[in-house]
Structures are given as structure tokens and as C-alpha cells.
Length: 414
Ligand code: SAJ
Image 1 (cartoon, rainbow, N blue to C red):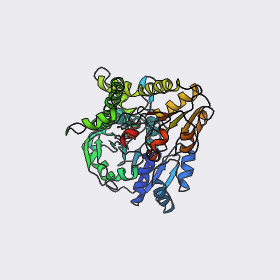
Image 2: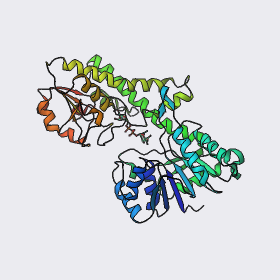
Image 3: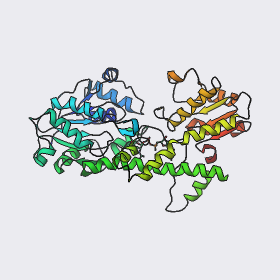
Image 4: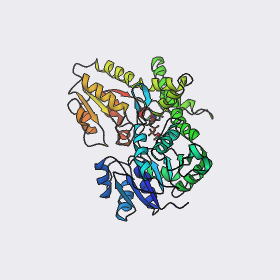
């Protein structure tokens, strides 16, 4: 199958790099997003998100005429849907963005087109997407109606790239492709092979959906184990990082690292989709979520206890991003801890975050963004929340007069 024109719906952290990757292979790419600002920015050859190397790629794609953004879907040979799938109250998956994208794409579909859902989705979402499209296009046949003979091919191919390394991982990672029929999967594999150098492995759509959720749930459970160990070790007066280092010397043990909690928009969200689908069975997965979500409160309590030693304590939070060496503050437990401390000790909480230039507006009244050096001079209590590279070279002599709460074990690792 020849894919001349490829349309990517949703130009965020996944959609935009994917669009740029196809454009780099000289395909005609139409990017679609409801956000006019994102569309205008991309059409100027610029980007509205932060991801290393993405700016160069998008700039080249737009100036060479391979990538164009718009707010309304246009006809194409393949459509990739990469819109958010957050959860609503009670941790229920919110498919409204997928529904809106499906309804927007349906009118421009033609016989022979391929539609791939890339968004991380609960099991059954691909079938639901096909149902929404079929409802609007009774003149076309879909795999749930005609199987291998369908006019439209539908597949799920979840993204698996690590923020900060998206451009490399997009090309190198293996891809799991779940077709609604065998042929659907094969056609989708041809599409991804345009730029993916990793292996493209075929399965059905439900298994592909569950595979992505399983990857992130597995990591969440692993981190929860490490976080639980950190609480146990604190009670028993054992350095948890030394303990993990030693236990990991065993050839079949590989414990992850404790931290202030789990952030980002994937690992803290996706396991809930499994819990929602199988609430009685997913006991360990649910408990891991609860363990990780309760870690920020534990850190806050420790900081408050440390602050009691001072009359007017100045507290410095080192890092508020959701993990090291990125600028992404979304769903960040570190930011949540800083916000809480800012409310409790207003005017006396400093934030050092080398990857941003200003704090989110709603935090500016209670928190003060400052340089590392100033924080080291002024703070009584230092809370290491993110192990950003610039923090690793701090001379430990400068910490001797302070109470240090190291949620990342950064000082235990040097
Ligand atoms: N974290 C720990 N301890 C660890 C590892 C991570 O506390 O040992 C914390 C981090 O600080 C962060 C959170 O977990 O707050 C998540 O970070 P991460 O690096 O584990 O993952 P993400 O959210 O950046 O990206 C994940 C990746 N999934 C897996 O590694 C299984 C990525 O490959 C996925 O594409 C991405 O989720 C996604 O989009 O789903």
C-alpha cells in the first residue's frame, strides 16, 4: 500500500514528533489540532512543546513543505490519532478526545484508508473508535462489519517513547501493532516501517491496548515496591539506597528507585485503566497506585517535622519537574509538595528549577523561584525532590549546616 498523504490528529508530545518523523521521510503530512496557537506555531516552523531535537525536525519539515498544520481534518491515506486519554472522577478513562477526533475524521474517510489509534487507551477503545466512525459513515464498511473485506482498516499502535528521548526512541523502539483484523495490522505495519527501525510486531487490537497499559503498570508496581521499602527503611533506620544497591547485586533482582511519588501523564494514569476494566482482579495494580500517590504526603510530613526545629524556617525545594532533566511540571509530585509547603510556610519557600524561567502563575504568590546558590545560602531545610544534573555537583560541605531531606537518594549515590 502506498501512503502518499498521512494525517496526524493531535499535535502534542507524541503526535508532533510522529508527524515530523513521517515528514522527514518525505511524506506529505497534514497535522491536525484543535489548538489554533499550536497550529500557527507549527506553520511558522516552530514548536509549542519542549523536546530535544524536535524544533530542528519540525522547522525542516515545514520549510521543505512536507508538514502543514490545520484545525480541520482533510482527506489522507492514513490517519493517526494521538490525542490525550486522561481520567475523570473516580479514575474512569475519559474517551471524549478520541470520540471528538473520530467524529472529525469520519467525514473525510474514503475507501482504502487506514486509521490508527496511538493514544494510550483502555481495552476496547479501538473497537469503540471504529464504531463511532461507522455510525457516521454507513456508506463505508469497517472491520467489525466486514472483517478482512472492509473498506477502512483500523489498528491500535500505542506509543512507548520516553519524554526527553522521543526522537531517538520513536525510530529505534519496537512497536506493537494490534489490527482489528490481520490485514489491518499488516497495512499499519507498512505505515510504521516508513520510519521505525525497531521491529513492528503484530497482534490484535485488544492485546495491543493491554500491552501498553501493562508496560506502565509494571513500572508503577516496581516503583511502588521501592517507595514502600523507603518507608520501611526509614522506620528501621536503614539507608534504602544502599539497601537497594546491595540487593540488586543479586543476579535476578532489579529494584527501581524510590522518589517523592510518581509523576507524568502516563505511569500515574494508565494503571487505573486496568483497574477500571477489572476492579476485582487488579488488586496489586490498584495498591501500587495508592502507595505511589501517598508518597508526597509522607515527604511533606517529614519536611514539616524538620521545620519544627527552626523559628522561621526557610525551606528550599530542589526541583519541581516530574523527573530529572526535563521541564515538564505536569502531574509532578515534586510540584505538589512545593505547592503544599508554600501554602503552609508562605514567603519562606524557595524553589530551584533550572529547566524553567517562571513558576506557574497560581504558585507565584507563595513560592519564590531562585538560583541554586541563593537557596544554598538561605535555606534551613533543603528538600531534594528531583535529581537534576546541576544538583549533583553541589559541594556537600555546603549542606553540613542544613537539614537535608533527600527524596531521590542523590547524596547517597555520589
Ligand atoms: N520514577 C521513580 N523511580 C524510578 C523510575 C521512575 O520514582 O525508579 C518516577 C519518575 O521520577 C517520574 C515517574 O516515575 O515521576 C515516571 O517516570 P518514568 O521515567 O518512569 O516514565 P515516563 O512517565 O517519563 O514515561 C513512561 C515510559 N514507560 C515505561 O518506561 C514503561 C515511556 O516508555 C512511555 O512511553 C511513557 O511512560 C508513556 O507515554 O506512556
